[in-house]
Image (cartoon, helix red, strand yellow):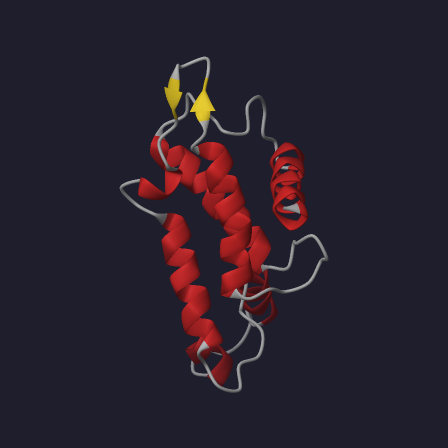
Length: 139
């Protein structure tokens, strides 16, 4: 129970720190938007933005997501009903991210995932590379 509460509190802190305003369940937002926010949170977890500040595996990420999902599907007194599950959105970005993590974890001799910032850094570093160079071929 303590871990679950800590994970939920971590989401609430993350939500507020990333510009979230009002009810973190986002009861008035479209289902797809709620899924997108949860996907952004999932990406943060994948990148090591966790309670302990370490990289975690898919199963642990799912534990974090499960706590937020419970909160986001709870009863909303204002609307007088339970909120729909953001994981049931037409496009489930969270599922896509978790599938990529699972695939990555299945790789032997894996290193670190390539994040957008790494890719953009490579583009900047090799912007002046000749078009027929190995660097240009990779990018």
